[in-house]
Image: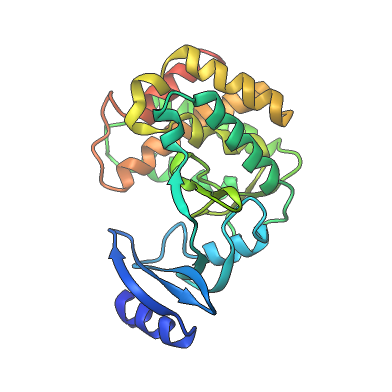
Length: 276
C-alpha cells in the first residue's frame, strides 16, 4: 500500500493539480495550488478514519452550505479553496456568539434533508463506542454516566423520525468563511440521523473558550436560538446532546487523550443532565 505522501503525489499528477505549497498535520497532508484555473486544496488522509469518505459526503451536499468538491476518492478530496477561510470560532472570540449561532443554524438549514449515502454509518452504529468502553478497563469516564447515556442514546436512536445525512461534526472549527460564498462547512464525517443529533458538537465549542461555553446561560441561550430557528424538538436536542457528549468523551479516551474532570465533553454532559 502506498504511503500518504506517495498517494498525494500520485493524485496531484492524475488530477493535474499544480501544487504551490504543502502542509502536514497529524491526520492528513494538505496541498495548496491550482486546478483548471481554480484555487484548490488537495487533502489526503494518512489513515482510514471518520473522514475517509468525506468526498462522497460533500458531493451529496452538492456545494450548498458546504465546500465544493472537484475530485475525490477514498481518503482524498480536491476541494475549492475558501478565501479568507477564517473559522467561525473567531466570531465567538470577538464576543458575537449569537451571530455565530445564527451562522450555524443557517448552515444546518442548507445541509438538511439529503439522503445519506449507503457508505455512511448511522448514529446507531456510533453507539458501539459505549460498548467498547464498557468492555475496557478504562476508569476515566464514570461507568454510571456511561450506562445512563448509553441507554438514553439507544432510546433516541430507535425513535428517530426524518432521518437524513448529517455532517457529524458541525462546529465552529469546521465552518469557514468565503468572501464570495459566505460561511461553508468542511470536513464532514457523514452520519445518518435526525437533525436534533447535529447540535451536540457545536455546544462544546469553541473548546478554548470552555468557561464561556459551559455557562448555563450560554447553553440555554444557544439551545433556545437553535430550537426556534430550526424548529427542533427541544427535549430531544438536550437528550441527544447529553448522551453524545458522553460518547465524545469516550472517543477522546480512544484517541489517547487524558480525560479528567476538566474535559469539556464531560462537563457539558453533566450540565445537560441537569436539564433532562
